[in-house]
Length: 407
Image (cartoon, rainbow, N blue to C red; front, top):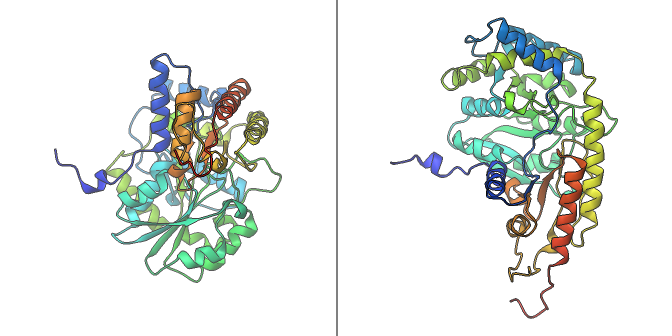
């Protein structure tokens, strides 16, 4: 069978692959702790599950509009108005099978071969691959730890060209947990205003999972005059613990949404009708569960970061949002395992941790910043404590290679 060059050049999702490998080892009887996938470990709140049951009983099992049910799009409009003072109409909203499909639809609808998309790195593993699958060229802009892993106006200015079609921003960030303030977003928008051919894709899917007191900032709300050049993407997966329900949405200019609907009409047609009904209950219903989620995540974050910092050779910033830690393991590189393997990069460190400690994490290379690992702390306190114990024990068994003796 002849496969397309487009598919042959695409890489599978690193997070999914590590999780698959961890599950396979567990099925073989290995004791594996998987902190590789970003999935809340809480149950979907009861009122959302109840809404899905009612939808089933009421026979809401038919095809819906490609863009999503009017009722859900209206609920999304209410959410945007309530949370961000953004006045949006349903024709400017698309519901997709997760926020991931919405991002993919937008890129497929707007990119021609050679068009460029600016992606600050580290970034979610799927961004550059989705751009490439749409025929575009990812322009990766490294964002250093000492800059908070965030894109600066100067770096953005240098990355923009006449071929730039999108800039992709994710706040809070996967994998770093970095959060852009309103002032930081406004400074980036000032740059983009000088380049009218470039639009901004704001991935807000971790919006509700923040640990500071500063209000959440999203570009279309920070600069309403710029909103006609913004696609705001969000979903129910993370904040509402609804990953398997697969509902995300995008709001943006009506011509863009119309084009994205054309793409979706020829792929999935629409998202699941039952999950759409449940998502209305999520957006319009009580949020009394969220403080409990946040308190648990904050406690887990602090436990994980403190534990990582206790391992010699590892350093870790405190993430401001999401549920990931992104420690540097640069201090472990060049050391030798008891089995004689030299840890040359983060890929080798991740493989060593899985083999030696039964601990599955994702190497930073997958997020376009080598020398780091991503740990998800969407896991219970006992699991996180055991993960740290295993990491520390494995690291204690590493050997320094004497200078002048590379073997």
